[in-house]
Image (cartoon, rainbow, N blue to C red; front, side, top):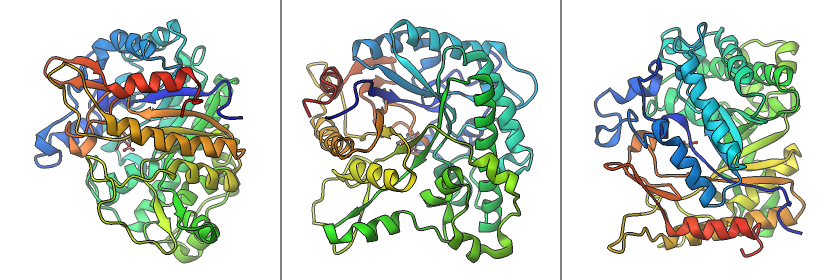
Length: 440
Ligand code: GCO
């Protein structure tokens, strides 16, 4: 037994990171468009106004996905493209772009996985307080309704939010991502509750409009890896601990209310009346049944007696590698939440460039993916319900505050000419897909 027969082998992207066309066909600015205008926020003063120009090149990109053997593709929708004011009038042209993209994917039998929110909040909604506004969950519901109405006949997999911990943590606590805020714990607790409610309302709308849809949420997660067999329990406990200090980085803060209908006890106790008041109905809304959890995993951390060996392999952005990160992430999540799991992101930035022979050789990426995927296979073989794997990313793209320097793609993007060159690893991944991971 290995990966299930209908395993989703895919790649992921996000709207602001690849689309460009930032002000075309009625699209309004998002918080990322505005954040990038501020001097010093993005390496080299870059921005996503053009990025990979995917908005104009989606047909070429989807064709390449098919040539590389992908059977699934995860992308996100730019809210400000389909609702420039965030609520109210729907911009049909913007919505049509996604409709055409979906048709193109289906033409090649590539299953679309739609992320509703991958960080690019309409700027108009930021002006109204963004996720701090108690109305924000209703805005999200309205937006979800517009997407579901248009795409729900063809899209059957939806992810409500991508990495709420990161857009709160980096965007509203550290101030390093849009919208660049540095909020206090009390404010962040309110924001988190609004995001939870928004998730719940979106699930409800999707159940109503797309009854055969599979719905989940994607968390950024850094698995706790037991240093020895004896550390397994400690690793599990540490993975799901959640305390007032930096509560938003905790997976339990996000997943416990959704799966169990409860915020972590310890957090509630520690926060006392700092915690926003909530009702039983709130918790019912938040904890409607979902079909899967998505995990974005790049790194892990060891629990137990462990000292980082000098010269540990690390990636171009300086992240250490952890061969068993996927394995432990999936095993711990399965133990706690007992839901099907997708790896909605995993990948590596390498020092990729075009060699004299015109190709992009990325042996480190091949080795990294090979190691991580073996771990995922172990998890599947141990009985965890692993539904699919999406490499981050389909192509090199705008890596948020780090601009265009990190290259996470299976496909190289020459930003001057917009030429796409599949890297060596893309052909390696094609073989993995062809054998459904038997060759790992
Ligand atoms: C995130 C996002 C992606 C990133 C990727 C690499 O995790 O930050 O979902 O948009 O580009 O993770 O850092």
